[in-house]
Amino acid sequence: MLTSLKYDQNFLQVSFQCILKEITFKSLILIPYIIIMKKFDLSVLDLAPVKQDKTIHDTFNDSLDLARATEKLGYKRFWLAEHHNMASIASSATSVLIGFIANGTEKIRVGSGGIMLPNHSSLVIAEQFGTLDSLFPGRIDLGVGRAPGTDGLTAKALGRNPLNINQHFPKQIAELQQYFSSENASSAVRAIPGEGCDIPIYVLGSSTDSAWLAAEFGLPYAFAGHFAPEMMAIAFELYRENYRPSARFPKPYVIACVNGIAAESDAEAKKLSTTLYQAFINIIRNDRKPYAKPVDDMDEIWNPMEKAHVMNMLRYSFIGSINSVTEQMKQFQNLFQVDEMMITSHIYEHHARVESYRIFRAASEVLMSNNTQKVS
Image (cartoon, rainbow, N blue to C red):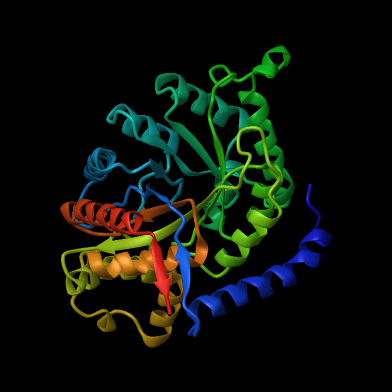
């Protein structure tokens, strides 16, 4: 495994490179030059949001409807995230919900963004996702993370041992790979279903530790920029520079998860975004109640310190009309050159949420149709 010494030797160098990259991007360049934007796919991260005055049954039906809508729009994948003991999120039984979504759609990839692996036995996850892949061949993704997806007390109830997670998580990834391999047929412990299944594993993270791990295993890397943006630039740089090609993934593959709220006008999108802001205020205040309806004035809810904290956490959020989000996506992609943008939309009204994803798809098509820009 990668050592902390290696991390220390490279961290300052990569940090400096990332700082220069952002300065270059933001500075005025006197000599015109050409930027060729890397083409990217669009995907969905759904937290199965529970809303005030709505039921969890409504939540699941809305998630399925959103999956069907984004499938028709050409989104690549639809991921669900494991969380526990949160009144605002209903995706705790992630594998079950993945089956529900996959059964109600036809071709969009469905998976976890992610399964919090230290909450589970590696064998059980291999069997669950082997079952899903057997039911829906070629459509299931397994994204894994090491965070608990909950508070400390609930993490303890899940059986996590915080003393060995850093050592155990890489071991669990290796165990999954072993259980999924056909060569495991001669092992005393086998995952059935699971053995021989073609299930790609993605490493999720919000820090540089996960970047090292994904690079070492030669696996795709998804970063949680929608709530932990501070280390994203450095994590991507570390991942790409230290990537060890694997048989399945000879090149690094980067997914950036970001918040996205699009509407007909900037003003409408700004109001819709107050549901997102309220959700994060509730996290800061440890008051994780169901998602609230949008409001006219957030200053009646948060104080200046809370506002600054929330806006920092949400710095990689695309909010506005199609023209605004197109420009925001362009700037983001010019800076990070990701392979895939995964959009999560905290919008109270379901129809507005579906419309937001339609606008983002249209914005991406505008960018991809004209991805060479002269900058002066």
